[in-house]
Length: 248
Image 1 (cartoon, rainbow, N blue to C red):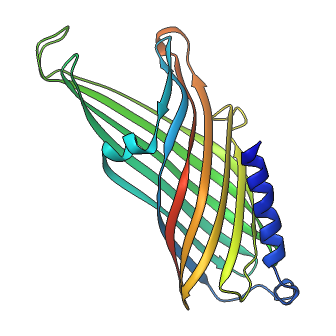
Image 2 (image 1 turned 90 degrees about the vertical axis):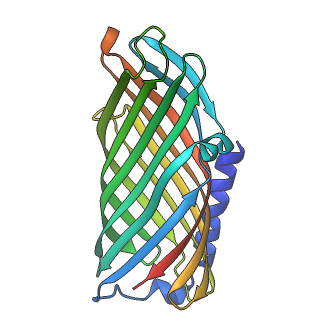
Image 3 (image 1 turned 120 degrees about the vertical axis):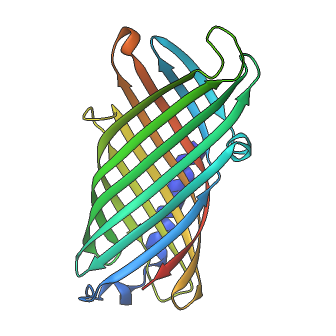
C-alpha cells in the first residue's frame, strides 16, 4: 500500500540522516524545551453511531475548514538527560446550520496526550502515557418542528487511552532532519485500538526555529454501551501538517 511504502521511506530517511558523530553524543544534563504550534489539514472518515444507529462519515479537509470556528494544536516537550515529558493537543470547534430541521449544529473534538519520554540512543526514544479523547455535540432548534424552538440537545463522550510509542529522529547538525513517530494504544482499556503514524521533515530556518512539514494519521476505534446507550467512534483523522518548532 502507498501509505506503508511512504512510512518505510521515512524510516530510511531518518536513519540515513543520522550521522555517526551524533550517535556518540551523550544526553544533555540541561533542560531542553521545544514548542511546536502546528496546523493540520484534517480529513475524517469512518463510522460513528449513537443509540443503535450508525452512519458512515467522510469529511474532507475543505468541509472541516469551512465550518471551523476555533482550533488549537501544538506539541510541547521538555527533556533533561535521558528522560523527559511531553504534551500534544488537538482541539477543533466546528459549527454549522442545518435546514431541515432548522437548527444550529455545534461539534467539538479534543485529543490531549500527556506522556513521558525515555531516550534509548542518539536516534530513538520511547514514549508512554495517556491520551484523553472528548467529543461534544449539540443541536439548537431555531423553529417549531418535532420540538419547540429554542430546544437544545447535547451529548458528550470522554474516554482515556493508554499509549506507548517510538520516535526515530536524525537530529544531526544538518539543516534538514527527519522524524518518524508511531504509537499504539487503547487495547480495550479505552478504545479497542488506537494508533498513530506521524512522519515529519524539519528544516532549520534560524538557530532555534525550524519549519516542520509532515503528514499525520490518527485512528481511534471506540465503542461503548448497548441499545439506547450505544456509542461508536471508529474513525481515521489524517492530513498534512505544517508548523514551527521553537527550541529553548
